Length: 144
Picture 1 (cartoon, rainbow, N blue to C red):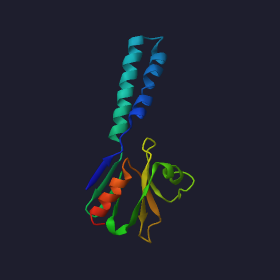
Picture 2: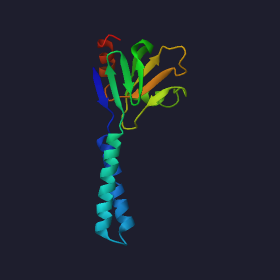
Picture 3: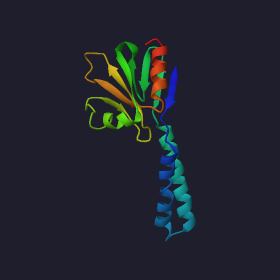
Picture 4: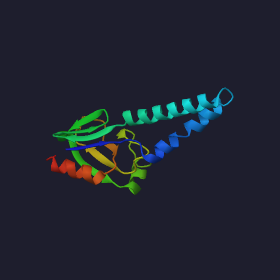
């Protein structure tokens, strides 16, 4: 069993904080207090929305789930670990346009889930994960 939420990293939360001074500048002619309160509410709402809508990567008996999609163990040929350095190419120049993607910019490494089903036009899934080795071990230990 493996479960991981691709929640935003600390630097993403900090970057979103830029909404506060921006909102203060917009509302400054009206009221400084309104600008600060509105900015903080927008920032908290943005952080909560990012966390709430973050995809979950899960390995359950006989199934691999990534976000809203799932694939049965009998349709998975392999799960290959892609390190942080190779993930940049896998997400860019080496990417097949038919691949299913569950990527987040704040998560560097990924796994490549090779699809075995000949009738499926998707050759593989590319899924961001914070710990690709643990995900691959969990898949193997689940008997898949």
